Length: 115
Image (cartoon, rainbow, N blue to C red; front, side):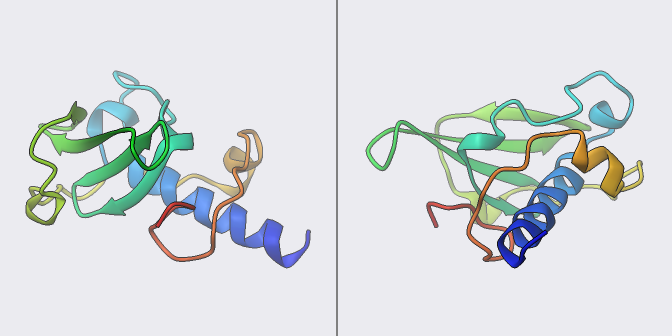
């Protein structure tokens, strides 16, 4: 694996670990992987910010609420996202990550290619 592949894998693992903060994900009540991860722009404490349709497209934020990731389109003040509880499940293993598609991202931590 080259440096770019390693960076992409590291970013993918960070994104997956962040997604697994939700109890619903760990308990199988919400998707094991983020169905919108290809549109993910930014991660933060208790939120995930997405852009659909390029720079002029729709922006959505998912907030961690009562153990579930919930999407909202209005009031994208992600700086005031509620604090998330500690994750209840372990981070994904390298074997788990290898089973999923690795998306090529820039190497900036907690941001996606559009940041």
